[in-house]
Amino acid sequence: MNINLPGAIENENPNSFLQLRPIEEFRHTPLIPISESAMRNYKEMLQEYHRRAFVLEIKKESIINFGLVLVASSICFYLIREVVRKEEEVAVSYQRLKHRRILGDDRRGSLL
Image (cartoon, rainbow, N blue to C red):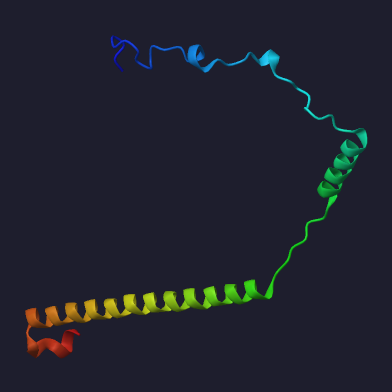
C-alpha cells in the first residue's frame, strides 16, 4: 500500500464514485400489489409444506449400489490384510534366516 501515490485505490472514498442511494429511499413494498387471496393461498401452501410428514424412500437401485460398494470394500480390505500378513511372514522368515546365518547351520534345530 503506497499512500503517497495519487489516485491509489486506498485513498479513494468508494461512495464518491458508486453514487449509492440512501437506505431510506428504498421501497419496502412490491411494485405490483399482491392481492389478499394470493397472499392467503401462499401462506396456506407454506403451512401445508411445513406440516407435511417426512417420507423415507429406499429404492432398489440404492440397495444394489450399497451392496456392490460393500462387496468391493470388503474385497479391498481382505486383499490389504493378506498383503500385510504376507509381508509380515516374509519379514519373520528374513529375521530367522539372519539369525541362522549368525548362529551357524549346526544349531538350526535347537533354536528355531
